[in-house]
Length: 78
Image (cartoon, rainbow, N blue to C red):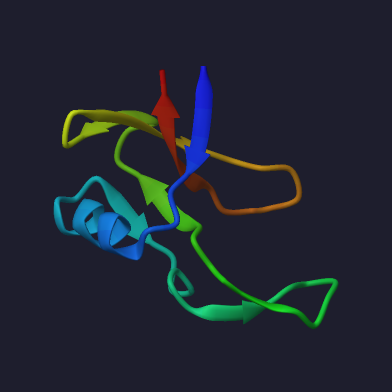
């Protein structure tokens, strides 16, 4: 099973409008890393309604990465 991090804010916003995910207050914002001064766009979320869900015929899942307190949305690629 291959995975791809969802970084398209249009897709994430559509998922939020449908009630599939709930945004963190920093989602989509430029933030500074905890241990670096480099800025990056924040794509993590607060929570997903279900750990594994479908959106537009594709499968997605909520996933945590080491060192991060918030989950991300991953697209499952077959």
